[in-house]
Image 1 (tube, helix red, strand yellow):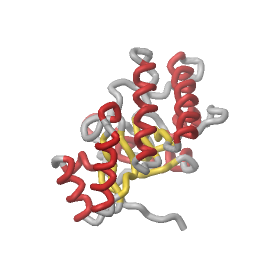
Image 2: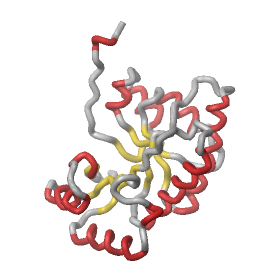
Image 3: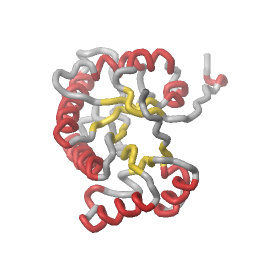
Length: 207
């Protein structure tokens, strides 16, 4: 049986970083998700800072379940794409050094047609980042929500020798009118973490 690992997203606590860590430990969490854009930044993390963070986590008996690296655009957009890819790779390296197995990001909306240039771009970037994950020891996880589980699965399964996991967010799927149960079935072999969040469809917008 797989070990159940309960993690807290620190940003949800709306506290300064150290106090958020302490609160997560007091809540009984064994792990945390850290935002690698607002709470720590790979480009500014020195060796001294890394050692201090590791000690802080050890003192509180916490591990890092994931780093969240939410880019302003998805990997389907060509604007500053190389910069986003490089920044994602740097975050994956930092995740490994913190003992986090995954980096979570919304990869961009997956087009339905595989002939769409955005689909081709996404496929190539996922291949690149998937191989990088195998190299550094921490993998990218695509968060669900902007497309159906079947569409995301089709994209990720198109990779030849690379692995990109899935961060399963049922609330985002529900809000965007996709079936969470169908997404689980389509993506079950790639799901690395699951978010315990609610999502309510506003019936006022259903036509």
